[in-house]
Image (cartoon, rainbow, N blue to C red; front, side, top):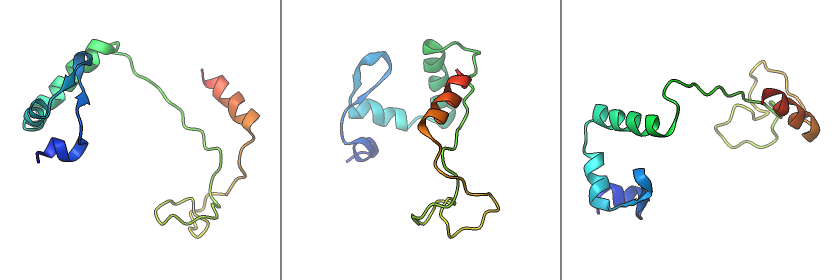
Length: 102
């Protein structure tokens, strides 16, 4: 089984809206990284404004004090991060703050 078959297990959509076969994807995986980066650059420019930068803002609707301990998240109550815990933000407040960013 090829690397691609192992990774995806099925045909994958590719540039142009078609479906690539496993051999084509294996060939792409074999390319040097800089060649893959160049191809990605061309695909991105074909579908997006070439010099536009998307700005995003993260909104924390609850910080710290999580009662669950998933073992990797610093939000768990057992970690002492020096950041004050906050209650879950009201839905209306979150929607209002999101609308301000648009």
